[in-house]
Amino acid sequence: MDFELSDEHRMIQETVRDFCETEIEPIAQEIEEEHRFPAEIFDQLADLDMMGVPISEEYGGLGGDTLMYSLVAEEIGRVSGSVGLSYVAHISLASKPIELFGTEEQKERWLRPLAEGEHMGGWALTEPGSGSDASDMDTTAEKREASDSEQGGVAAEKDGDEWVLNGTKQFITNASEAGSVLVKAVTDPDAGYGGISTFIVDPREDDGFEVTTVWDKMGLNASPTCEIQLENVRLPEDRLLGEEGDGWEQTKKTLDGGRISIAALSTGLAQGAYDHAKEYSQEREQFGQPISEFDAIRDKLVDMHRKIERARLLTHQAATTYDQGEPVTRESALAKLDASEAAREVAEDAVQVLGGYGYTTDFAPQRFYRDAKLMEIGEGTSEIQHLVIGRELGL
Ligand SMILES: Cc1cc2nc3c(=O)[nH]c(=O)nc-3n(C[C@H](O)[C@H](O)[C@H](O)COP(=O)(O)OP(=O)(O)OC[C@H]3O[C@@H](n4cnc5c(N)ncnc54)[C@H](O)[C@@H]3O)c2cc1C
Image 1 (tube, protein in one colour):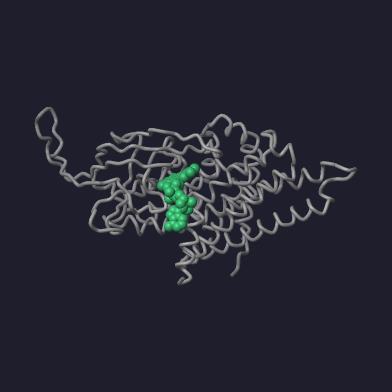
Image 2 (image 1 turned 90 degrees about the vertical axis):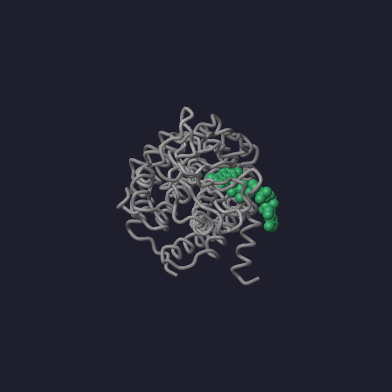
């Protein structure tokens, strides 16, 4: 398989790297400590046309491929896990499904502002009682005629059908900042996987949508992780994404793409941690020589490099497979599993290379270490990736 990067890939990679080093890296620790979502960074990413990299130009995107998008996600991850997580959730979870499954009108109304970076997007699958077993959800969407609603004791004029959503969604990235959230809900409780549908909710306009918690986390605190409550949220029919009952199939396809971006982000986290460790090891002297000259430290850095190269190859393999329109479930799960473990291991080693300084918040490795842990949990835990890969291998 050919992972050759084109001139365009390299140009985008360099542009984003430059931006990340000058604009994001200097504030990465500060926004983490302040638990602040850096809206200004996303505005600047929009100015660079980065908020819709793999979305068609027809709907305001850059029209790039998944490989290009992976390169961008990796570069952002190299400086900030928080910005990276909000970024990939916005693109692969909140935007891509509208491009894949939406009508022309939905793409104009909901995809364009996401791709142009007018606002952020979110994607709500997980619930307090269902995470890995995501289809076992309690959120419901019932169809009611609009005339069901009473206005001042008089039945409102019938103007077509509406969906009414009720439920709680947990750990939803970007929900507090979003202009649209794709919500999964049960539309037919007797139909199993075929009874789940996807709805486009406008958190700012739709009554009954409320962010009830923004979680404090061990890392990634500049990326809001929200609990949301849906209480009698009434939606017109044109908020259904795709066909009724398609929600689970859409989820599987969305996660196939989403896991590639978590793999790319993880590769970036690992690279960022490695870069700091390598530089430090060549400057720090003990016993009269740079610590990089001790076999133990050199071997650690070599192993860190080896893991990053492997994670990147698997990520690019999955991205290229996706771009070729081939089935990608095995490749994306493999890349996600491998790269997320690499990120945690490499970041841990980076803390070790920096010794006591590595344990302080004056140095970046601790942040990469804390951020990397999520990559083994979000979009399917490592245990679930093993299940997915095992199934793909016929085991
Ligand atoms: C920072 C953050 C951001 C997130 N963003 C989003 C988002 O934007 N949208 C969204 O919908 N969700 C999001 N999530 C939710 C995330 O995808 C879930 O947390 C994850 O899928 C795990 O679900 P759970 O937390 O309920 O854990 P559980 O499913 O309860 O799992 C607990 C443990 O049991 C293990 N386990 C469960 N089932 C099995 C099994 N069959 N075999 C072996 N082991 C098993 C798991 O691997 C895990 O170790 C986010 C989570 C976090 C922390």
